[in-house]
Each structure stands twice: as structure tokens, then as C-alpha cells.
Length: 246
Image 1: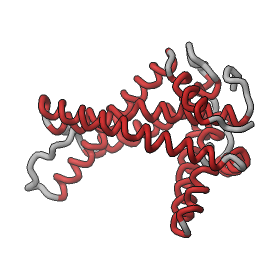
Image 2 (image 1 turned 180 degrees about the vertical axis):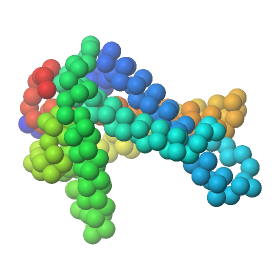
Image 3 (image 1 turned 60 degrees about the vertical axis):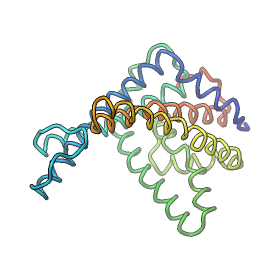
């Protein structure tokens, strides 16, 4: 089945513009908030240890032991990966009102491990392709685009997910590239402008530390939108009904 860019965009919106989309967006923002504070706390603590004379750093940090802030940062980052997997399963499954419990539990440890390794290999392939020439890097980016989707939805290991993504996208690289261009260039302007405005307003009221925190939170809902659009494109290319179950 061919990819329709227009319906991929509108369908992606519809997959998040519902009760489940709101719940997942709020969860994503909460985890993102925890991760930012924990990460900046660990960073500032490490910075002060290396340079005790350094004065206050304008970042949203808490005065907690480095081991605690680092552990919370790692845990929240893993939970963000879990949230992404649950979101993909929900969007591909067409669930709009209530998330099945299996989406949270089914092979989650193995799926997260494969997602992390698969994401690293995917990035490495794109990097190596870009070192050779620009075009191989773009091809790798498009061809293996659905690696995480296959890991989340089909519980594939990362090798099978890379192979299946290559098979699914073959013959559709140009429309997929056009879709990605719209998503990352067109949509990229919106969160960038919003983040700048929020940063300016919050910074004027609450200071630079809260400004950094607020601007980071603004961009998180757009990450869910991208997942919704990828889920719609995935369903289109597989030729499945939008309301099909996983």
C-alpha cells in the first residue's frame, strides 16, 4: 500500500487528539520534568565538585547527593522509553479511550533493551551513511525509520526490526522523506518558537532556571505527535485498518 502524506499527517493528529493522547502527553511531560530536574541536579553537583569556587548555575537543580540525582535521571530516562513504547502500541492499535494493560507489561524489559540497542544501531547506521555521502545517510534514516515501531508493536528483536523496517519502507523512500521533511522542518518551527516565547516569559517572571525547565517541557508534546504520525504511516504501509488491535 502506498503512503499518503496528507492522510499520514491528519491521521497522526487524530491518533493523539483523544483521551489516551492527553493521558500519554501528561505522563510524558511529568517524566520529562523529573528527568530534567534530576539530570541538571547531577550536572550541577558534578560541576561544583570539579570547581568548588563556582557560584550558582542558572539551571533547575536540587541540592541532593550526586548518586541519587544520577539514579533518578537514569530511571526517568528508562521510563520515558517505556512511555514511548506504550504510546506507539496505543497509536498503532487505534486505542482512543483506555489503554490495555498488556501495552504496559508485555515483554517490556526485553522490548526496552531492544529499543535502546536498536536506537543506538539505527543512529550508528545513519552516522556511517552520512560519513560516506549525504544520500546513504538519508536512505538509512528513512529505511530504518520503523525500527522502534516493530520492536514495540511486534516485539521484534532489534535485528529483525531493522530488517522488517527496510522491507516495509522499500519503494516508499521518497514519500517518507517528504513526510519527514514536513514533520521535522515544518513542525520543528512550532515547538521552537513556542519554547522561545515560553522561555522569555517564564524567565522574566521566575528566572533563568525555570525558563530552561519550561522551554524543555513545551517541546515534549510534539514528540508524541511525531510518534502518532509515524504510527499512522506504519499502518498505511502495512495496509491495516486504523482500528486494528495489536
